[in-house]
Every structure is written in C-alpha cells, then in structure tokens.
Image (cartoon, rainbow, N blue to C red; front, side):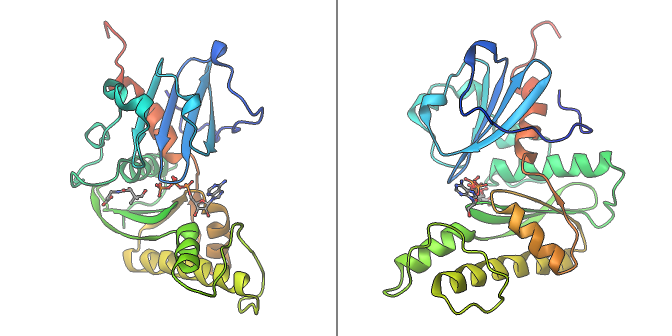
Length: 253
Ligand SMILES: Nc1ncnc2c1ncn2[C@@H]1O[C@H](COP(=O)(O)OP(=O)(O)OP(=O)(O)O)[C@@H](O)[C@H]1O
Ligand SMILES: CC(C)(CO)[C@@H](O)C(=O)NCCC(=O)O
C-alpha cells in the first residue's frame, strides 16, 4: 500500500521493463499517453509514455481507461478499475475515472498533510483536456470545468486555419506578447489555460492541486500570478496503487 509520506517515484530511467523482477503494475490509459506504475519490492516507480500495447502483460496488472482501450485489454475486465471502485462520494456515473482517482488522491494527501479543506479542493489535471474537478468541504464531488489542453488547442488552431502552423514542440518564451506565430500560439494557449485555472481557484476558494503532462509549466505560470498549488504528476497512479486491494483482494483476508 502506498504511504502518503513517500515522495513520487523516480520514473522509468532505464528505457525498458524487467518483467522478471516485477511484482504488480497499474496502467491508466489517457487520451494521449499511457501512465504506468510499476512495483519492485516495496518501491513503486511511475512513467508517462506513448501508447504501446507491447508493454501490456495482464499478469498482476490493474488498469483503468478514459482513452481508447487496446484489444489486449478487452478480455481483462476483471482487473479493470472502474469509477464505482473509487470511494469518492457524489460522482455522476459519467465522470471520467481519471478525474475521480485524481481528486480522491489529492484529497487524501491534503488531509494527511493537515492542509486546509474548509473550502474544498480543486484539482486541475492539465492533460489532453484540462479538467477542473471540485470537491466540497466534505470531500464530495461538486462539479467542474473542461476545456481543450495545450496540445489539443495547438492542433485545432493548425487544422482549422490556413495560415497557422503545426507546432510540434511547445515554444516557451518570457515575452508575454511574442511576434513569432508559433510563440504567440503557445503563449496564447498557456496564458488562457492558466487564467482558467486561476478563475476556478478564485471562484471556488478551494485549495489547489495540479497534475497532468502540462503541470510543470502551469505551476510556473501560477507562481508568477501569486497562486500556490501542490503539484503531483502521479496522483491518479498512486490512487490506483492504493485501490489494488479493492480490485484484487488477497484471498483469505
Ligand atoms: N511526451 C509528451 N507527449 C505528449 N504530451 C506531452 C508530453 N510531454 C508533455 N505533454 C503535454 O501533456 C499534455 C497531455 O497530458 P497527459 O499525458 O497527462 O494527457 P492524458 O493523460 O493522455 O490525457 P487525458 O487525461 O486528458 O485523457 C499535452 O497537452 C502536452 O502538451
Ligand atoms: C475529461 C477527460 C477527457 C479528462 O481526461 C476524461 O475524464 C473523460 O473523458 N471524462 C468523461 C466525462 C466527464 O468526466 O464528465
């Protein structure tokens, strides 16, 4: 079981998995990337990688999905973690399991740290979609906001116009009003997303947590605006690890 005091994992540094020494794994299928947690002994490591069905081995795997489910997992429904397995109250049945996992995980961490929860908790998951998920002061799902994330906004600008380019890599600049087109597209989307998070934070009064692939620059933008947030890119995976006993109870216990 995950210890809330432990720091985040080291990520996959070696470029490959050693299946022979692995205990359990958790896989969260997102809309752009697959998110992996891998156990070796007492230690979990976390990795966020391009979808690749070659890494799927259903032995000792629990998985959840909001993105497209690969054929290799279609027959492994018994090890699928669904929304109803997440002990978050008040969720509508259509809520993405990633939102429930992330918000539940952030709430537990905030409570464990003795942090303020009087005005609830707001999770900004800066993924393919920027999902804002608000829990009330009792830790119940209250609602949220959804909008396209950085990459999706850049893609839609490029595909929906004649003159705007495809911007494969994020173009960061300190200039808030850049003259270059690619830089202006990135700056526009990033400032828009950061402003959306600040607005939700101010209107909810809740404590703020952030996660997702765009969390690093979002955290910097929030700091620049004087908004403090807790960042944890492995919130959902750590919540899945915690819920392994719910999906795969140890026989006889
Ligand atoms: N190596 C990468 N590949 C793809 N996106 C990346 C990468 N590194 C950072 N990003 C950023 O992360 C965002 C996608 O985040 P993430 O991987 O968390 O999404 P996801 O979990 O697949 O999406 P969702 O949860 O919304 O379905 C993109 O907007 C992109 O700008
Ligand atoms: C909003 C996303 C895309 C965020 O990953 C995912 O959680 C999802 O597909 N949710 C289903 C709809 C909802 O949460 O209201």
